[in-house]
Length: 82
Image (cartoon, rainbow, N blue to C red; front, side, top):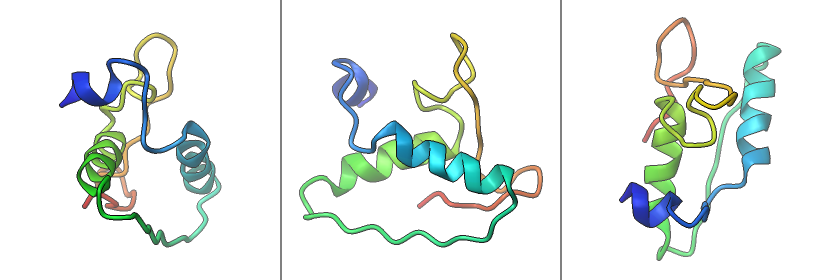
């Protein structure tokens, strides 16, 4: 599934969305997320979001000078995975 989603550089969530989450976390702001899809892309969207929350998203995994952020419930952070 990684190759299908990230092989061509195609993402379902834009990087600025992830950077907004990182900003909110850094500034210790309370927030809630609500998502709406058209149903066809739900599986890919959930997969990509969970990869980000686990610190495994290709653009946010801590490799190649990319930041690594986790929203998996570790280190007193929110658990945001589906």
